Image (cartoon, rainbow, N blue to C red; front, side, top):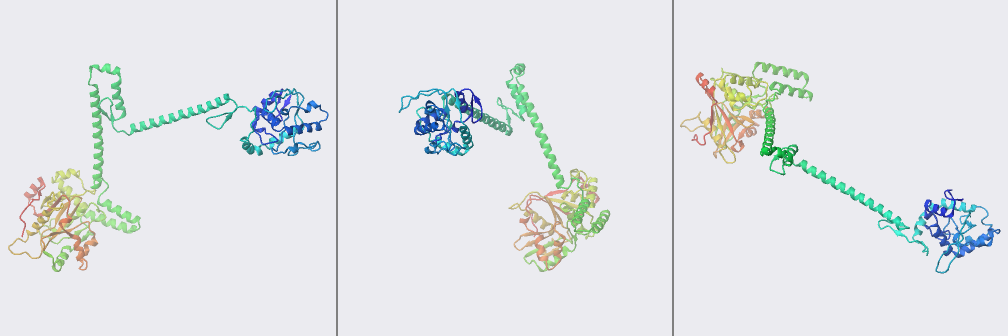
Length: 625
């Protein structure tokens, strides 16, 4: 039995031991102890030692005789390729092999060697360039010395130390006559000892390559499929590829195409060739129905937006907006709770009485303007002013929607100072004005306007316009008319006809053969001027030396502090600039003017209920001189 000194496995024959060393232990673990050769097989190493180091072999032979004198001459004259010397120092010199028996009696030195002798060696014939033949004895039994075990063990421990050097020395391997032919892989750096191993190795490469190509094809196919599905999903038009029918969705298109392709269905439908036409009509009807529903939904949303814009969304009216404003002021620390409750009580008292509390009123505005034009504005040839009018600005309760109500209050403040209108009414609050308009609708005035507001204004933030002011004045017994300037009449979308008409309105009070004075304060009430989204009050007119006309307009959007600047001699010159409006300042597409003409009789009031008197502005008329 032979025992492997590396792993301890036992085998019967030396050939089995060689096979075991080749298969279970790497070839590069064998290296020549006399030079740097490594990475060779067992037979190659034996042949290398016998041919490349013959002098060392002779020294080893003499050393064998000295170490074992009892052995015969034939035992020590073993052929050179049967002696394996292992060392843990590849750079051992030749002189290290010629030591006497005293140097190797104890332990193993770094350059210590051990020899393997065979009792029976089978001779093999080896052909070389320098020899004809050599006989090798076949060994039937092998005796391994203890020194060999220690040397092999020591060599295994230092294997990691020599790995890097062995890899380098592989490139310098000696060429032997018996060296086998090597086969290198064309796809990597692997070198095989026979062609069959190389073939199996290359087939593994090809299998990996085929698998990678298959994976690439699968990925490409998936990408193309995803791109196709994405392009199909992004398309909004589902057009039949066999006819010109356009379907609303993919399911309808699939059903339609199946009618084309299903032969059984086509046989059944042979008696009705217009089946595709019926389907197309049905799909078209469905599409039209869906479009109408979408338009209706969009119209409802737009109507809700308009309701919110014009204060008809049910979010509360004047009182609720005032309360929310005061609550926010308390939350921000701008008003203490006691003041909040005090102002709320005053507001509720004013709303209950129906009379405006006068908190936003500025009195004496027209009187201040009259005094200003007496001494200033010498570039004006003529100035006409309305009768005394108080300015009403928006408050926290009607900010953003109460301009129509405030202009009506300005008009009433002027009418109150006339004897003909004084006993008719007083200046009401905004909620009371809303109630008065509803009463006018109930009397039959302006049924179209009433339906627009659904017969309800109280508790809303609804905007009112010229027709509501007309209905309100008519219900109070005041004669009024609406003049509509429905399109621009001058360059740059201006309205010079509007300015001429206002001049005509003020000239009616001073018609005589005498030259009118420069400054005239008439007894005429102000004009209610309405355009898209806002309304203001015209309280006067300037005529410059160059013939240019300029309107004097009071805006309810102006603050009370700005209006009071007209009452001070120090600030009136600056404040007048803000109320002057030239033709270039009025460029809305359409304007409407409400003008008061007097008191209605009972018959006139009955006639005025049947229709709203709207007069379109004439394109030309004879202006007053």
